[in-house]
Image 1: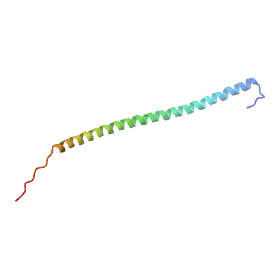
Image 2: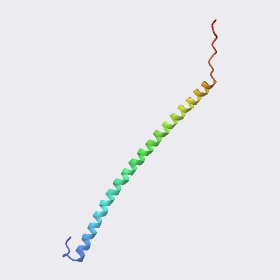
Image 3: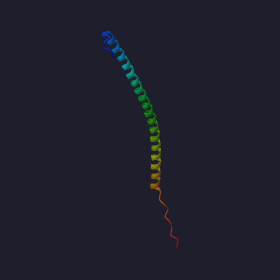
Image 4: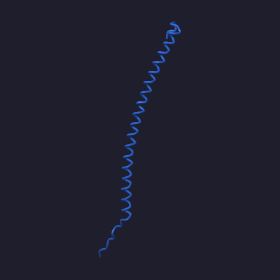
Length: 83
């Protein structure tokens, strides 16, 4: 950065540098916010899928429990011996 132009020019150059730095970091921040929003959408979608899977699991567990209860009640017929 040239320093021989005087303090006013140096101050204007510093302001321009600061402005460009702010623009750069704002673009970086906007990119990160976009990534966060995409990640949030993915998490929401996965939660919905997980809720569906949990409901299916509950149905399967209920079916297995009902089947087990029926099996506990079931007693095979006694066979008669044939003389």
